Image 1 (cartoon, rainbow, N blue to C red):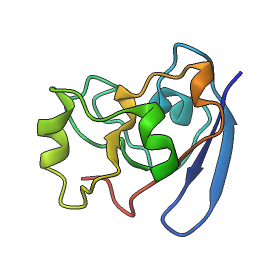
Image 2: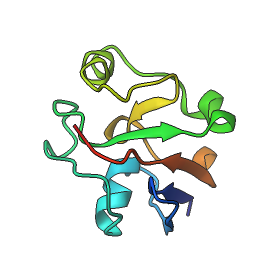
Image 3: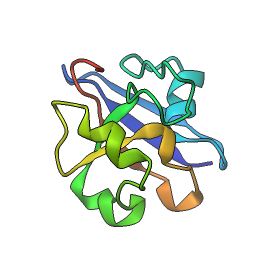
Length: 106
């Protein structure tokens, strides 16, 4: 079972067990990680599950998809590490993944 660590903007850390087939967003919601709003429920249509993927994990996670790009473009905090957590599928390869949460979800 992969573990994912979510780091809040203030440094609080939450490490959770995630199930293969979940998304990074759904694992956060199931484990009540604060800072992931997920207003659209994972439909890639709101951008309120924005995370920053730690640089060492970017090659494993990959870049944003074609539907994700426009949603990320609406976020003023977007940077090269930005992803929507609803678009990152949990697999064994992501065991130990670390993502940072923005101060606010837009």
